[in-house]
Amino acid sequence: MILEALGSAVLGIVLAWTAVHRLSHRLPVRTLVLATGVAGALFGDFVTHSALGPGTILPSLLGAAIVSAASLSLLLRPAGRLRRRSAPA
Image (cartoon, rainbow, N blue to C red):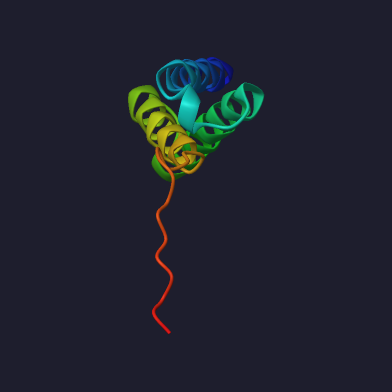
């Protein structure tokens, strides 16, 4: 169980680090992104492990990757400026 948690934490760091280097212009501070990636991976591992039970390492890591990617996607900002039109009076 400890190795599974460490593996999911490393997976979360890798996903967050990749997101920081590819999408740094659309993400907030690096420490927030790294913490969100790790927290999402650990939560995804916990939920998957709770649902499937012990002895399922690969599905737990897959669940960790999915939840980590989903939580990192919530941090993305729009690429360009939003163009708002004023409503005609």
